[in-house]
Amino acid sequence: MIAGSKDLAQFFSELSPPEGAPFQIFQALFRFVEAKVNTVNRCGIILTLIFFSSGCDQKPTNLHTSATVSFAGQVQPIFDANCVQCHVREAPQGGLVLEEGSSYQMLVSKKSSSTDMVRVQPGAPERSYLFHKLMGTQMQAKGSGLGMPLTEGVYSQLPPKDIATISAWIEAGALDN
Ligand code: HEC
Image (tube, rainbow, N blue to C red; front, top):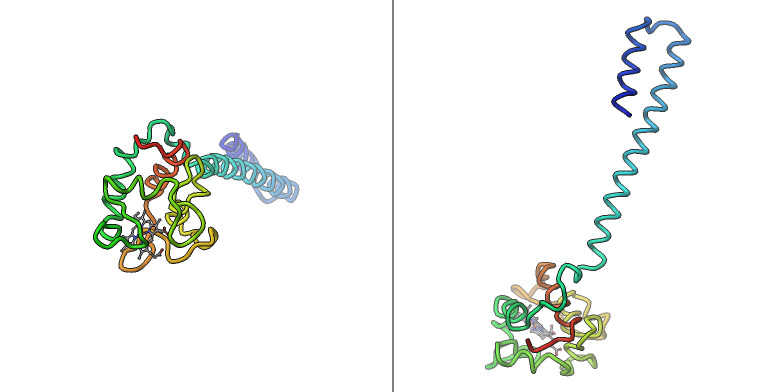
């Protein structure tokens, strides 16, 4: 449609010399309409993008079918790679051991050592202190300290896909699977 309009504009400019006042008025009108069409089209594209991206943002956990998240196969490896250096049996930070064999018992339905919330409430990430620590929202959960994990004493959030995996595991009932 726009390409067609441009052809038409070119056609008119070739057809008659652009000096005549009536023609210039016509041309100005034409440019105005064309600009409007462009704006409408751009808005359409932007709205479409917002629609699709918000669809992705709102439910990150939908990317995983909850039933397929395995604690041993997908959650524990995240702890092994990012957490066990501090949450180790010998000197567990925050009183929490995240090593294989202890992590499940230490998390599920266990009260946090720094707030009234449990560390993992099966079926409810937003009522799980672990999830708040991962999101850096521990203060809103009436907790304390920093977001997890820490790198050189600073909260350095896990990649969204790892948080989504843990969240999906909690949502699906925090099974020992
Ligand atoms: C560099 C050390 C370090 C690393 C790495 C680390 N933590 Fe922590 N963690 C701490 C310290 C120190 C505390 C206690 C102070 C605080 O809450 O900020 C803590 C506290 C916690 C608590 C609160 C425990 C409670 O009952 O209140 C949770 C949950 C937690 N960490 C989860 C994790 C997870 C999950 C990871 C990996 C993704 C991780 N941490 C990585 C040092 C670490």
